[in-house]
Length: 311
Image 1 (cartoon, helix red, strand yellow):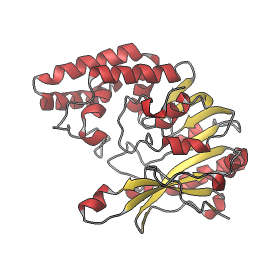
Image 2 (cartoon, one colour):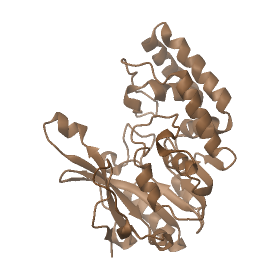
Image 3 (cartoon, helix red, strand yellow):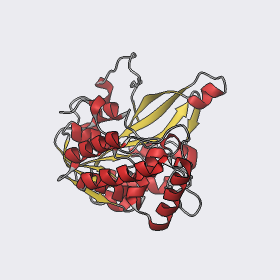
Image 4 (tube, helix red, strand yellow):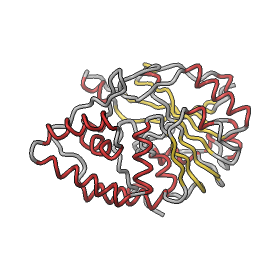
């Protein structure tokens, strides 16, 4: 089994749950048939779960088609994908800024997912940005050239070893993906951060409606599907986004996600918290119930008590 610190991650995606994965995975039950990520992003949870052999199969979905196709290429064609990245990366040494903008223009024109990997590795803080037409418009990080080819190759090959032969990839509406879930499966959802973006934000290829999402969760409850949702959050006393309604009967856990860099710049000492919601069907499958978990305050991410069960 791979140590969590050495888990490979080719895609450095801002907002990825890579660092929170060890905490989130504490709520994965035994005997998971398929771990389903309808909003996969960098697929950090699937990768971390596969390293721990927590599910038999995986379903990785993202409405951003080039991103979903890139994840598939990484898993199914790791050598070719790594070689393409190396060629693209090496070509930037004449004028790296101009090279980035040329690759960005080419990507927006032909949507080649292999070009997307270079853009993600080189763009500012690994933070994607899209314009109103859905075109990638983030700028290059002028202080760095992006992940070195040898490091990228090792990450790509590592992810392929973990997921190849046991993973399906798709680019569908999340509701279509949820319709495939069975009672032995586990759905992990990290939808666009509605507390900041609402239904549309430049950081996401597409947003989702709060009401539609709640309706989808109600359907999962009616079908007895186990699921985890990373959703709203708060910074200090300020809460972002609408709470999921009490009628869903979800266990609510807050995860400490560290000091807010924005608040620090403003001279305020505030901590950011992210909310994790567990369905009733999931908590029924857990040997240890949410209130039985404890984590040292010395660790960066901690579970806060009390754990709330909405009634």
